[in-house]
Length: 176
Image 1 (cartoon, helix red, strand yellow):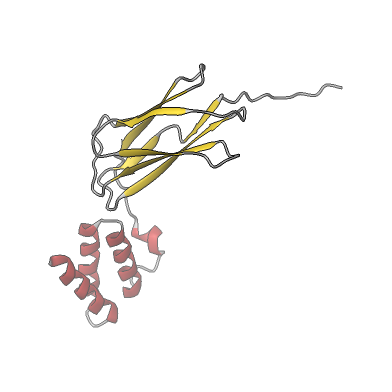
Image 2 (tube, one colour; image 1 turned 45 degrees about the vertical axis):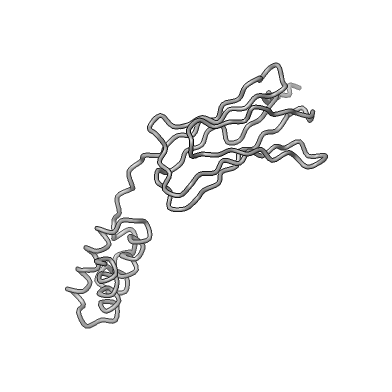
Protein backbone atom coordinates (compact mmCIF):
# COMPACT_ATOMS: atom_id res chain seq x y z
CA UNK A 1 0.00 0.00 0.00
CA UNK A 2 1.29 3.42 -0.98
CA UNK A 3 0.14 6.60 0.68
CA UNK A 4 0.93 9.84 -1.07
CA UNK A 5 1.39 12.91 1.04
CA UNK A 6 2.00 16.53 0.33
CA UNK A 7 4.00 18.80 2.56
CA UNK A 8 3.40 22.50 2.51
CA UNK A 9 6.32 24.41 3.88
CA UNK A 10 5.12 27.61 5.47
CA UNK A 11 7.42 30.61 5.68
CA UNK A 12 8.72 31.32 9.17
CA UNK A 13 6.89 34.65 9.13
CA UNK A 14 3.51 34.96 7.42
CA UNK A 15 2.40 38.40 6.18
CA UNK A 16 -1.16 38.88 4.91
CA UNK A 17 -1.82 40.51 2.57
CA UNK A 18 1.56 40.39 0.84
CA UNK A 19 0.65 43.48 -1.19
CA UNK A 20 -2.04 46.16 -1.07
CA UNK A 21 -3.87 47.75 -3.99
CA UNK A 22 -5.72 51.02 -3.37
CA UNK A 23 -8.12 52.84 -5.65
CA UNK A 24 -6.89 56.32 -6.39
CA UNK A 25 -8.58 59.30 -4.77
CA UNK A 26 -10.65 57.38 -2.22
CA UNK A 27 -13.69 59.39 -1.07
CA UNK A 28 -13.15 58.73 2.67
CA UNK A 29 -10.26 58.24 5.06
CA UNK A 30 -9.18 54.62 4.82
CA UNK A 31 -7.63 51.95 6.98
CA UNK A 32 -6.05 48.69 5.87
CA UNK A 33 -4.70 45.97 8.16
CA UNK A 34 -1.67 43.79 7.58
CA UNK A 35 -1.36 40.71 9.76
CA UNK A 36 2.07 39.34 10.73
CA UNK A 37 2.43 35.95 12.41
CA UNK A 38 5.34 33.71 13.41
CA UNK A 39 4.40 30.29 12.02
CA UNK A 40 6.49 28.38 14.55
CA UNK A 41 4.57 29.87 17.46
CA UNK A 42 7.56 31.75 18.80
CA UNK A 43 7.66 35.35 19.97
CA UNK A 44 8.50 37.82 17.25
CA UNK A 45 9.91 41.31 17.45
CA UNK A 46 9.01 43.91 14.80
CA UNK A 47 11.00 47.14 14.57
CA UNK A 48 11.61 50.10 12.26
CA UNK A 49 8.08 50.16 10.87
CA UNK A 50 7.77 52.82 8.17
CA UNK A 51 5.98 53.72 4.95
CA UNK A 52 7.40 55.73 2.06
CA UNK A 53 5.59 58.93 1.15
CA UNK A 54 4.30 61.55 3.49
CA UNK A 55 0.53 61.10 3.61
CA UNK A 56 0.22 57.43 4.49
CA UNK A 57 0.74 56.44 8.12
CA UNK A 58 1.46 53.07 9.71
CA UNK A 59 1.12 51.94 13.30
CA UNK A 60 1.85 48.66 15.04
CA UNK A 61 -0.67 46.95 17.26
CA UNK A 62 1.19 44.58 19.60
CA UNK A 63 -0.37 41.16 20.09
CA UNK A 64 -2.43 40.38 23.14
CA UNK A 65 -0.82 37.97 25.59
CA UNK A 66 -0.83 34.43 24.28
CA UNK A 67 -1.65 35.52 20.72
CA UNK A 68 1.30 35.83 18.36
CA UNK A 69 -0.44 37.93 15.74
CA UNK A 70 0.73 41.47 15.07
CA UNK A 71 -1.43 44.01 13.26
CA UNK A 72 0.06 46.77 11.17
CA UNK A 73 -2.51 49.47 10.47
CA UNK A 74 -2.11 51.53 7.29
CA UNK A 75 -4.19 54.72 7.22
CA UNK A 76 -4.54 57.54 4.76
CA UNK A 77 -6.62 60.66 4.14
CA UNK A 78 -9.62 60.98 1.85
CA UNK A 79 -8.67 61.94 -1.69
CA UNK A 80 -5.12 60.63 -1.36
CA UNK A 81 -3.68 59.71 -4.74
CA UNK A 82 -0.87 57.17 -4.78
CA UNK A 83 2.01 57.98 -7.10
CA UNK A 84 2.29 55.73 -10.17
CA UNK A 85 5.24 53.96 -8.56
CA UNK A 86 3.19 53.26 -5.43
CA UNK A 87 4.49 53.23 -1.87
CA UNK A 88 6.19 50.63 0.33
CA UNK A 89 5.64 49.54 3.92
CA UNK A 90 8.78 48.10 5.47
CA UNK A 91 9.69 46.67 8.84
CA UNK A 92 12.44 44.59 10.38
CA UNK A 93 12.13 41.37 12.35
CA UNK A 94 14.40 39.54 14.76
CA UNK A 95 14.33 36.42 12.57
CA UNK A 96 17.58 35.74 10.68
CA UNK A 97 15.72 34.13 7.76
CA UNK A 98 13.52 37.20 7.22
CA UNK A 99 15.25 40.27 8.57
CA UNK A 100 13.34 42.84 6.50
CA UNK A 101 9.82 42.65 5.09
CA UNK A 102 8.40 44.90 2.38
CA UNK A 103 4.70 45.17 1.51
CA UNK A 104 4.10 47.12 -1.72
CA UNK A 105 1.14 49.51 -1.90
CA UNK A 106 0.08 49.94 -5.53
CA UNK A 107 -2.52 52.13 -7.24
CA UNK A 108 -5.45 50.41 -8.92
CA UNK A 109 -5.90 52.17 -12.22
CA UNK A 110 -8.30 49.72 -13.84
CA UNK A 111 -10.96 51.51 -15.85
CA UNK A 112 -14.54 51.00 -14.69
CA UNK A 113 -16.24 48.07 -16.36
CA UNK A 114 -18.62 48.88 -19.19
CA UNK A 115 -22.24 48.95 -18.14
CA UNK A 116 -24.87 47.06 -20.09
CA UNK A 117 -28.35 48.19 -19.14
CA UNK A 118 -29.94 44.94 -20.29
CA UNK A 119 -27.75 42.90 -17.94
CA UNK A 120 -28.15 45.38 -15.09
CA UNK A 121 -31.94 45.61 -15.03
CA UNK A 122 -33.10 42.76 -17.24
CA UNK A 123 -35.00 42.85 -20.49
CA UNK A 124 -37.68 45.26 -19.39
CA UNK A 125 -35.87 48.53 -20.10
CA UNK A 126 -39.09 50.32 -21.07
CA UNK A 127 -40.30 50.57 -17.52
CA UNK A 128 -39.61 53.99 -16.02
CA UNK A 129 -38.86 52.71 -12.53
CA UNK A 130 -36.27 50.24 -13.87
CA UNK A 131 -34.50 53.01 -15.76
CA UNK A 132 -34.59 55.20 -12.65
CA UNK A 133 -33.10 52.40 -10.54
CA UNK A 134 -30.37 51.87 -13.12
CA UNK A 135 -29.54 55.59 -13.22
CA UNK A 136 -29.32 55.69 -9.42
CA UNK A 137 -26.85 52.78 -9.50
CA UNK A 138 -24.75 54.69 -12.01
CA UNK A 139 -24.78 57.76 -9.75
CA UNK A 140 -23.72 55.60 -6.80
CA UNK A 141 -20.72 54.29 -8.75
CA UNK A 142 -19.68 57.80 -9.78
CA UNK A 143 -20.68 57.58 -13.45
CA UNK A 144 -22.63 60.83 -13.42
CA UNK A 145 -22.48 61.50 -17.16
CA UNK A 146 -24.08 58.18 -18.11
CA UNK A 147 -26.60 58.47 -15.26
CA UNK A 148 -27.71 61.91 -16.47
CA UNK A 149 -28.09 60.56 -20.00
CA UNK A 150 -30.42 57.81 -18.78
CA UNK A 151 -32.36 60.24 -16.58
CA UNK A 152 -32.95 62.52 -19.59
CA UNK A 153 -34.14 59.52 -21.64
CA UNK A 154 -36.50 58.60 -18.84
CA UNK A 155 -37.99 62.10 -18.70
CA UNK A 156 -38.39 62.18 -22.51
CA UNK A 157 -39.94 58.72 -22.76
CA UNK A 158 -42.19 58.77 -19.68
CA UNK A 159 -42.84 62.48 -18.99
CA UNK A 160 -45.92 61.96 -16.79
CA UNK A 161 -44.58 59.17 -14.58
CA UNK A 162 -43.58 59.49 -10.94
CA UNK A 163 -40.16 58.17 -11.93
CA UNK A 164 -39.79 61.07 -14.39
CA UNK A 165 -40.53 63.54 -11.60
CA UNK A 166 -37.82 61.98 -9.45
CA UNK A 167 -35.47 61.95 -12.45
CA UNK A 168 -36.06 65.68 -12.93
CA UNK A 169 -35.17 66.27 -9.29
CA UNK A 170 -31.97 64.22 -9.67
CA UNK A 171 -31.04 66.14 -12.84
CA UNK A 172 -31.64 69.47 -11.07
CA UNK A 173 -29.46 68.35 -8.14
CA UNK A 174 -26.70 67.26 -10.52
CA UNK A 175 -26.78 70.61 -12.32
CA UNK A 176 -26.06 72.48 -9.08
